[in-house]
Length: 143
Image 1: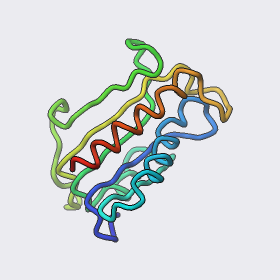
Image 2: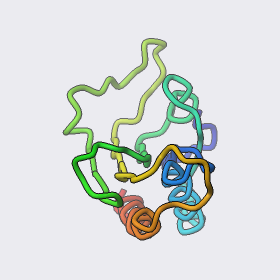
Image 3: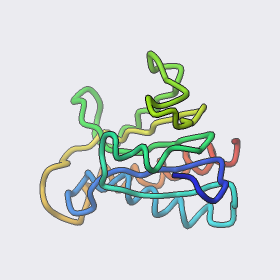
Image 4: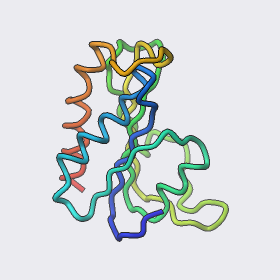
């Protein structure tokens, strides 16, 4: 939950011991380093899923989410950018009345191997990492 007044949350999801599934966490770590000087931006990472994510996102105006995805319809390393306009509906409050971000962007990086134990991402994901970081840094600087 946002307790420090920051308006923007960059949230990296994943598991850093499952090869390509680490992309969201690793992107968040690099973004955190790059935007540390911005007081209105929080950068966090988690292995949590589902409703547990509410604890992270409540109270922010903008949420930029980065995670791994395996659609089979794009090459590994492809960055899917999903805006809130592309989603069917976004409530502005949870059933508990908690304020949700009014602006959402998702960067979902197509992965090759999200299931093998290991700390080394595949080459395609290693190449996609700085591109995803640049996209998020640019987005934060525009907000």
